[in-house]
Length: 133
Image 1 (cartoon, rainbow, N blue to C red):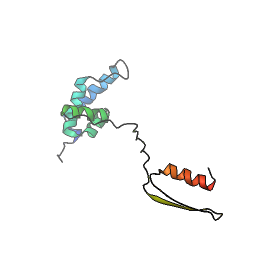
Image 2: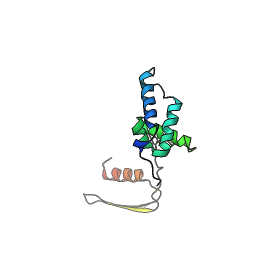
Image 3: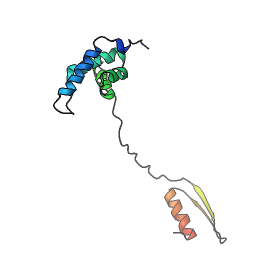
Image 4: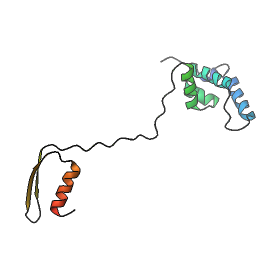
């Protein structure tokens, strides 16, 4: 890992911090985008001192600074994490050849050899035979 200079002793950092503070005081509204020149200065420091330290020192959003640093380096920004992921339900498949043996509490017995039943079919057969359906 490359050794980074202490961010407190960086020349020019205080100037950038003050320029950003001045812009915040004079901007027309709270959601106004920060000028590209100020972002470029913050990205320049982030390249030398790291994103977290720079974001904290000049009081900018960590995620935005990280994205701008990646763009400046020619890398693609990290992909957004999907908020919702849908999984398609598995299609019911047959159980293959099986033998079903059921003993009822009244002493009745049922033995069936079948193939191609789904779990839903198996439940319906056993509930129907036992009188629970």
